[in-house]
Length: 351
Image: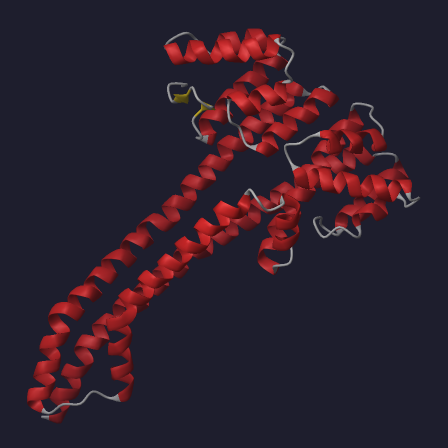
């Protein structure tokens, strides 16, 4: 199971491998294993790199490093998962948190594979269509043009536009890909220099992206705050714990904002009304939970609802992607067919 390990950074970046490890680690902790015992059991000494990784993990724990820091540094897990583990160190549900984090990473890997399957076949069709257009442009179109000239045939205006489009499409498509590659490269180069908070606030301005951003932030914040409150920590202390972590700067910003509001005398539900990072319903859920004394429970329920809605929207979006690409490819092939056959039909009608 753990044969693909990168000793420089821990596991490889395959989230399903990381997910399986975290899930099994969490299951063992819930069965009464200590952290060291669970790691010793899971990382069986089959290979030298496995032994080295185990030694590094156990050595870091013995030096007093936190579990979240060890996991983030040695296993190279995503920052939001490290933040979950950090909060679990305070609310005590480490086994449950690791199991859920593992399930999330496994599910995320499956979604990535599903997305690859959605795009793989249509992109291959687009590539084949472009190759056909290049061959048409280089081989058939010159012969057709010489035939049209010899017979005195002039294509109609619409057909002329279609022929120009087909001739120039490979260049247009290549230019679009280069532009997309350039924008992506610039984004990742400057991503580390940009503030994650500013990026989140920027993305929340766009209608389509804002839905996913708000659902994600609402789900994560509600879930972790619920766990902290369930463990007996007060609201202010919970916000201070969330603010103290460094894995998710956006959560630090949110917690700092809420603490300032509370110190200014604002009720807790009003802390979320001025934040564009959350669903509008969060303020109502917090108010309702405080009123009936079930804030932690209702936050957890609302978190699950947000996560389910996020999954439903993602699956619904994926259902439309492939048909849209196939429709584009179909129209593309029809354009190629008409560009060849229409002149012939028009010539035959003129005979």
